[in-house]
Image (cartoon, rainbow, N blue to C red):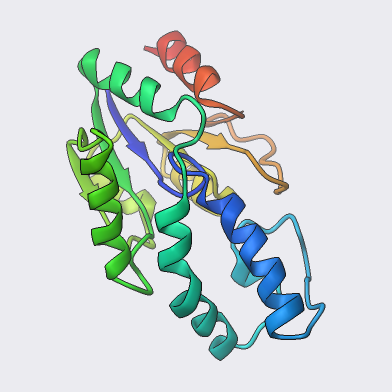
Length: 192
C-alpha cells in the first residue's frame, strides 16, 4: 500500500508546541489577545495577526519548535512496522514553505532517530491532493480538515487525524477520523 503522511500533528507533536508558543507570542510579545477561533488548526487562522507578525513568529520560533518536537505516541513504532510489512511511506508536507532550513532540520531528526525510512518526501506542498493523485497514494494521513477534505474529494481514502481542537468532517465516505497511531494501524489492516 502507498501511504501518504503529513508531519506536523501526525508524525510530530509540533502542533502542540505551536499552540503553546503562539499563545505566549500573542499575549507577551505582541501584547494582544487576538485569538479568533481555537478550532482552527493553523495558527495563522487562530489569531488576528498581520502578515509581518506571522512572519516574525515563524522566523523566530519555527526552527526551535521543529527541533523540540517529539514523535507522536506510537508513530515511530507503527511507521517502522508498516514499512517492514512492505508499505511505501511518502511524506507529503507543507513544512519548508516559509523556511527551507526546516527541511534540513527534519531530515537530520529522521537520520538521528533511525527514521529515514520513507520512500519519498515531498516538502513545501500546498496542493497535497495533486501529489497524492500523481503518486497514486492509496491513503493519506493528515491533521488538516481542509487537506483531508480536498484529498478525499479527489477520490483518495483519507485518515483525518485529530489531536487538538478542530472542526469535524461530516458525510465524506473517503474520510475516517482517528485519534492515535494504534487506531491508524488497526484501520489500515482492516481496509487492506
